Every structure is written in C-alpha cells, then in structure tokens.
Amino acid sequence: MAAVIAMLEELRGLAPLTAEGAAARFSAQEWTPGGKPRHGVETSWDKGSIGAWIQTFTSGTVSVSFAVWIRDVDESGYFDDLEAVYEQGEQALADFLPEVEESPLANHLIEAEPTEEDRDEFITVKKWTLGARILTAGVIQQDTDLPVMVVVALEEPGAA
Image 1 (cartoon, rainbow, N blue to C red):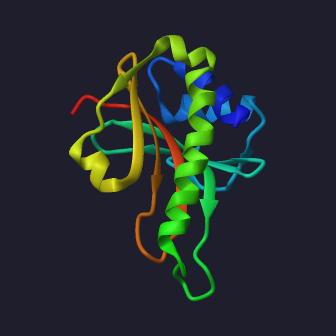
Image 2: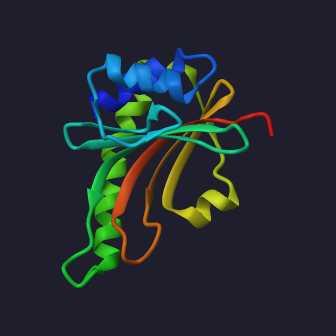
C-alpha cells in the first residue's frame, strides 16, 4: 500500500490534476504501463499487485484510481458466499484506512460525508476532501459477475 500512498502524495502536488501529469508521475515512480493509451496518454498502470488507471471525463473531471485488493468471481462466474467476500473486502479496507489516515496526506484531508450516489455505488465507503479534490476509498462490485475490489480514487472535478 505504500506505493499507493506515495502516488497520492505525488498527485497531491500536481496542479491541476491532468491525465498527462498523472501518467508522468506514474512513470517517474516506476509503475509499469499497461498498454492502454488514450489520446496519446498511458491510462493503465501496475505496481506489484496494485492496478491503477487514469480517466478523463467529458466534464473535464480527472480521476486516478487504484485497485488495492481484488477478489475475483469463482469458477461459476459468481461467488458462493457473497456476504463473506464483502466482509473480506470491508476488512481489507479497514486495514488500509489507517495507512491513509497516518500518512503525510492526513494533515491535508478533511473527512467528507458520502453522497447518496456513493452509498449506491459502494458496499462501504470513506470520503475526504483534499483541497479542491475528492479522495474516496471503498469496497465496490460493479456487477454480480465482476470482482469485488477495494478501490482508492483521487478525483479533481472539472469545470462543468
């Protein structure tokens, strides 16, 4: 998880947060590109067991996300005990949160209330503001036949 914290610290210093700037920081921190360039910018990165991706939305919002824990579906394409997998994800998130809250980022984080959309999207979620940016950490499963993941995302809203 130290690699994620280090990248979040690097990205905090990037103003504004852009896909190009984030890609340069990933490269400088020796993350491995995943071969998913978009508009000439590498958008998928890996380091150890952690995956990361950069997204730019039409609104101008830039998001850098990390998958810090993944539990893939079983051979049936689903989970035999989905609640147990959710509990494992919640524990992985609980183990990760102190690393964020005790990192150099902690002095810059202000806890924020999750939105209704966050509650619909995540199984469990914690959210902060980091200046004008939003840092979100949570357990997510986007569809029943997709993995359960603990993700951390730093987002800079664009000018809508």
